[in-house]
Image 1: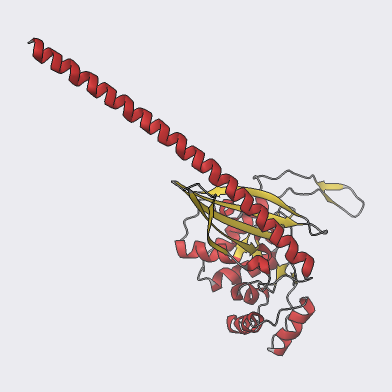
Image 2: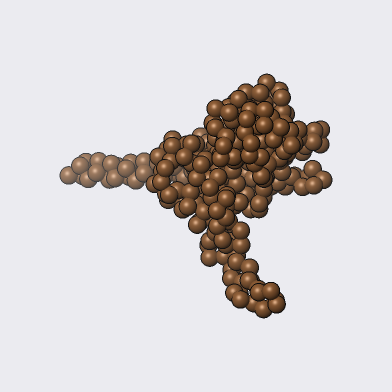
Length: 303
């Protein structure tokens, strides 16, 4: 009995000790993971500074913004390491011109939907294969995020008082889409063609995809838009809105789209860092000011 009791005590002590070691190992692993995530996060912040620099230099060199500039060149699987340190971080990133997409902020003004802009959105979504009321749903959500201004009559008397926004301003397209039940393929197409910027913007015809260009004018077909895209990608960039209108006329399109341009002030930067067991993805919205200085409007980690 004494031997059995001793064996039981030894077994219990061994189990407790093993449990303590396992918990200590798990806690140590958690601390190491948090350290890796913190270091990966700092590397991503450095990547955002790189993106700001590239955008600023591109805007300083040329008056127009197009996909042949340095900002459009992605960074792929770049190894970052220190001499004598066996740990290696791998960084990837790319910059997108957000003004090459249709800005959903444009579909409403002072809390009221704009029929012409909603029509452009409907044509765009139809080209993406969506025939339901998604355009009106998105326009209503945007209108709720804008405060309504006071309405006055000819004598200056207030007919309707100003009201605050009924919903918080989203930080991007993902916030607007929210919990909408959309197919993954449609979500990818929406991310490629739509954006949400916190102000009214023009569409950069030098970076817009064919669906966005075709949606701008009712009498323009997707095939005609692709012809323009082909010329553009061969280096025949548009100089301004008038140049775009002239080329449209050459294709037989009579309507001159409004709200277009050949420059941009809004860009998004997406970076990915893999460092030990940490895998972080960060996206940021970059705004360029009139003096070509760049600021980060918001940034978020993508899970």
